[in-house]
Amino acid sequence: MELWKRTLALASAALVAGCGADLVVSNVQPNGAPVINADNAVEYPLRVVVTNQGTDPAGPFKVSTHYSGGAIDPARTFSVGFDVPPGAPFVYYPSTTTPLAPGASVTFDGHLVFHPAEHGVNVALSARADSCAGDEMMPPYCRVEESNEGNNASAPITLALP
Image (tube, rainbow, N blue to C red; front, side):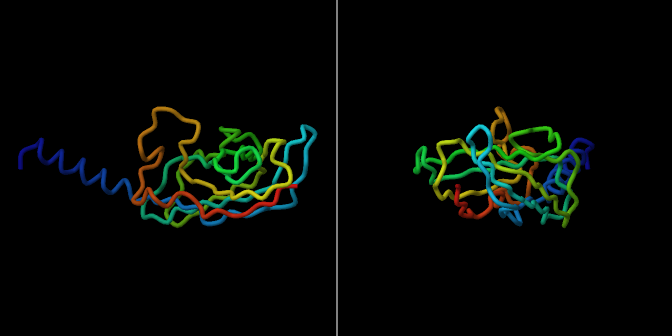
């Protein structure tokens, strides 16, 4: 086999093998009682667990949270800040900094911060692993090329905002 054909075949095999990661939000749930903070915003404690159910390690990624059904515009979906202390690289979007092994999970414990206008409503909240929210010029698969790009978002859960 000619050298260039062998090099192309090896590169193609490496590319296919390199996208065996598969990130899913395996759990999203309230992690305490919501409070109204000094700025009149609703802070809602939340736990999000992301699992790599693939066969390859998943490189660093970030998580975003989104809600619909709020008082501002019930028909639209909005991003909501998910603050995970201490000092995550992205304050609005928590992230990992190291690869996630196949079968491993990472847990993000933090709180959502809803706009003060969202008092007294129920919202449908979902979390997305390997999110590109807030980024520009990202490839279609975002940061981690996965074997299944269609399963990154959790099913929505209902949160009652005080």
